Length: 208
Image 1 (cartoon, rainbow, N blue to C red):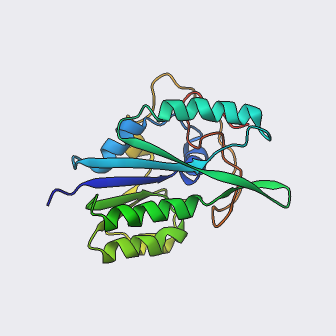
Image 2: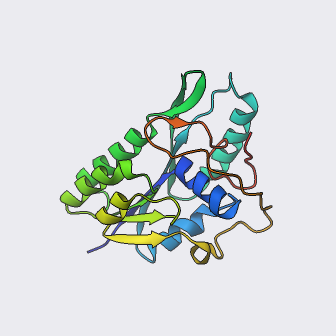
């Protein structure tokens, strides 16, 4: 069995976990995905987040574009962008979870991977992971101990605990560490726009 790996990254979820646990976002995505693969061949990595509205947040949109331009240079990584909508006057992400779950199932159904690794602690994805398992795929979850749903741990065939030891050697050299800030709330359903321009950015993105 070739064990081709597809990695699905919930960008907003990863950003908030990095912020709350380490106070930094300068993650080297090439090295990060390679460590998750652990020597297995990578089919592709998919990164999901919401696109900032340039009319409402022009500075945030500009910074996000800088980050996404850097992210798109990562080998075998595709960026998937959802939209924003106003809910009681507050911008929230729309459709990100559905987009990720749809890709995970579509690529599995078309036999493009053998192992799906989901980087998220959001329990809303548990049913999609179970559906992938029912197709005969192996599913793994990469999670932070402070940000994980029990249902995700129960459905996963294998688990990657994202802690200080895991991230050793995965940060971009020379990047500045940012102070930690409190979490603004769980990421379920429509997501409040608490994330920075592109989620867990490198040295180019900052939270507006």
